[in-house]
Image (tube, rainbow over all chains, first blue to last red; front, side, top):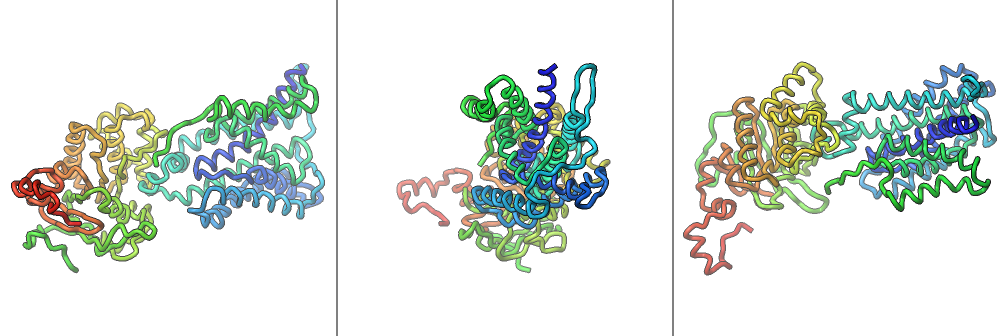
Length: 291
Length: 272
């Protein structure tokens, strides 16, 4: 029973990491930029929901604030690309990376200024309740996280394979020049991908906030999610989820079986081993780009 | 409007409409001038070829027409409008489709998805379906491989896919950049036969950039020769094929004059 509960809570954590990692990979695949503010996007999504829902702020019903938060993170991603990142076109990748790191700091302190730096709990209807399957007691929040992640994965799968815009997003990331020749508006597609990854981050943030209290520094979880994306294979969407789940599962088992202090090393030890022995990650999509 | 004067001196314009008229365009890669005042006309229903050595500016010319690059100067008239500086998706919507050099398929998408992306600017589902079937009748191999990732196709099949994907935009004018690149002679023959058929049967006007001058001139109605960003010759394809200069520089035919010249190779004729 203990093992099963560890497994479920690890899986739930892993789903959150996986969703953040998904945001990294979405943007990387489409624009070859790495958005180091992805964790802070997640934090911002969580805080927008909290600011709308909690009684000390706006006090809206949870199920109304969730779609507002997701939509506003989508708009945030779209406008960020349209107004800021498009101007960086032609600059070096390093400049873009530094910009996203700086953006992460800005978001962290802006959130701190608005909602405070102290940990707060989201007043979520799924927090702090249990579900029982026979003798097994699981947190409702954890079950929710897993189901929402599965649901979102299915939606994204159909979106990328069955809709015209989804296939166009794939096309633009596989061969940007050819996408231009086909009349695909590549710049707008890029902005839409930033919007999509903002929305995915918002979902991750809401799920994470339902599992415990949050403060503006939870954006640093992005580092762990980045490791997860690398483990899974940077550039592969299923790989990002898989990497997230692996990291999520390692943590509780490591802390259960290995002495405290050493257990936190495990995800990064795995990252290290993966980089040495399988540098493209577990589910790498290796196709060389022609110059 | 000035007309490019053929080197033979006489006017050889057939009574056809000009589809595309490029007027004195200049395009730059950073500080480097790749097109230096280039003018040419493409007549409706014809296959027009632009010949030239590496770096003559042929690809740049095509990129400028399709809107991927913007010219610094000059006009490009198409459909009664100056399309110079328009964005690529506007140009595609106006009926010009660019089949790029080196095929440039979407490697991880299936053949079918690649074709669907060619029709991205269209929304008439019945028409798209009909055109997909039309592409499959011209290239039956693509129908066989419709569920296969485009990256796994052979070079020739990828070229067919690139042309088929271009057709999906329902173009009036198709810009074909080096369709023979890296293909075996027999495949080149096959591809050019299909280009000819598409031109005759579907009425697609073609502008063809080639280094393989012989094949291109055999299939084309009219030809231009480009050197260092300028048009230096323009004539009927048949007559270009007979022209001594073209034979010597692009067809590798050793004329008597050239053979005599071998002893004095330093005096070899050149435009540079």
